Length: 96
Image 1: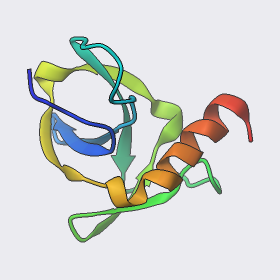
Image 2 (image 1 turned 30 degrees about the horizontal axis):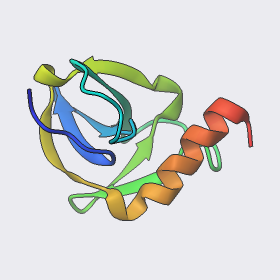
Image 3 (image 1 turned 180 degrees about the vertical axis):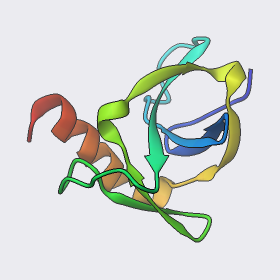
Image 4 (image 1 turned 90 degrees about the horizontal axis):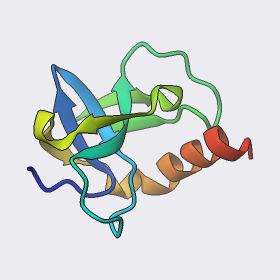
């Protein structure tokens, strides 16, 4: 099982995803992620642009999901953009 931490970018079948699950949670075979898509409609605060590997992606927050860790391959990190990603999840969950 690959070690993934919050704000890591992982790839599943060619789709990049950001890990949004908190690091202190107990180990589980699945991890909560949000896809990074190039053509997703952006809504202010809910879908921030994320820069990864020199490309701009839209955080598709409404497509939040759990994926088996064993299916993911770590390809980087966007920890430097963590505040905007956390804000997007907060907007999704609480509307604020």
